[in-house]
Length: 435
Image (tube, rainbow, N blue to C red; front, side):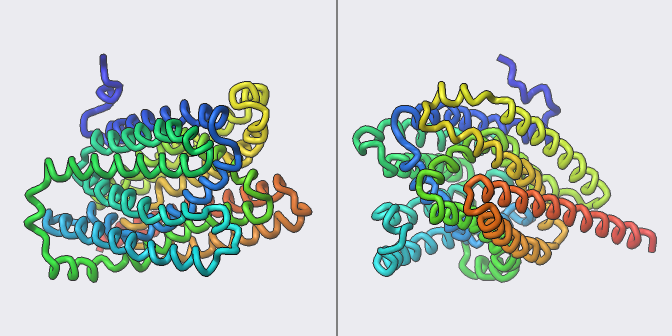
């Protein structure tokens, strides 16, 4: 059979995105097929609620575990520097996971009466496993991205889903349809993806192990300190906002509402995640090779418009889905998931555009501005959530609409600020060339 990617020029940006998106699509299709089965036959909203809280908390810790040194791999020119940054990233992930375990013990002991600990229970001690497996997988993925091995990256994403989703089904009945089945399935998938990428690295790049040097690692850690100082806090705030949002809903509207929110976002993520995750990684590699800011501005504009158009199409599709289809497929107890999805998609499409293109700040060296923007983002979320909750009379849907409005405002602002900096950099480069 003809590979559709072959219809796009070999080595082109579009082909790389298509290849990586194809693997993401395969993995997301598994999720799309199994998630309704999990919802209808095995797990209720309460189990998904606890699972969603676990995922949001673990992702905050995963995102900070490498201190974002893994993102510096693709911008280095020397193979030795790339290798040592990979080793530094894997080291920081491992240390983070080790430190998180006793930290979870303190949380479990000292905050045993909080709603979070009561709901998660001993599951909180599984978080370091998620951090180590997926943090290491992400670091190795940046190595593959630098090597432009997009088929291998796509395979890793597929293996993650292929391992996790069947495990969730297999463990549902033995565990009584409780959240541990969902969480163990997620960890199993993360572990499978990590071992696959580790195998690829040892098979193809084992020779770079000889480049490992403690003194080189220390030098690179100082040289690339902008990543832990600015990029990591930005990512931490972004994922922290998601966790804060879920915790806000969890504390005020209960576990069941979170159980609807988590799968709703997962369904939307199937669509937006296919393109955005593939696009962001390929885009980051592409822009490190572009020195002409006029060309970079055109590329940014072009793909912002493409992503916005795709988001509008996705939003229209979700609003056209009949409510009867949801109750027929998932059952009556999941009827509320569609109206929630229709609110969530309003801001998630804007988030997709902004986050997919945000790596342009690394190219321009405007990470400080990105950090300021993300701090502003946190306050916008605070105002929209508490304001929406208060002025809607503690209404769940009123709060969601306020949150969505705040998110749309921020992500439009974020895209505009990046474009403004591109205009400035283009003009500055033009002036320098004329002198």
